[in-house]
Length: 117
Length: 113
Image (cartoon, rainbow over all chains, first blue to last red; front, top):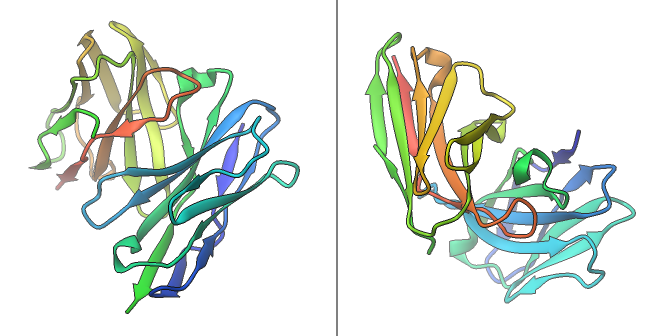
């Protein structure tokens, strides 16, 4: 069974600085997708970024980028120029590329990010 | 934003009473999911649906049942609510079981006294 581990329950960053959130996963599959979701105090789950395992290039979305290390099974999220609105819970998630269990997401337990002004 | 609504958004009920949560989508996506979120556990899958009348169990399905009679609606029922089912419940939808990401509804906070 696949597992996702976020080893940092809480992180803090100064506004305008850069922070990296860690995520590791365990799988025997070669085809899969990885996601980072953001959950602000409003509770809404917002997709931040996705990475296809078959792509070597790291995904980037504006100030958000990932460091995808397939061999190490690591998928970290880097937030550049942190803003107060980035304060939230961040969840790393895995999804099988084979439609296993009809594509349900396997989540890590989350990292709570605080941004200091 | 994906068109997903959940009702009710908040509910307080007593142990032993039946509760039904509704998820409604306007995206015509085939796949629908119910997750629960608890502190220290992230989100865990309760049940999912891969088509009308096609459903299956997830990781934490005990005490829950689901139904999907129309593409747009996915119902989660707690036949006899218990305090351990106090949680935040999220519905999610997806076009496919592989490629596409899941989009989430706003969540329902359920408290069982």
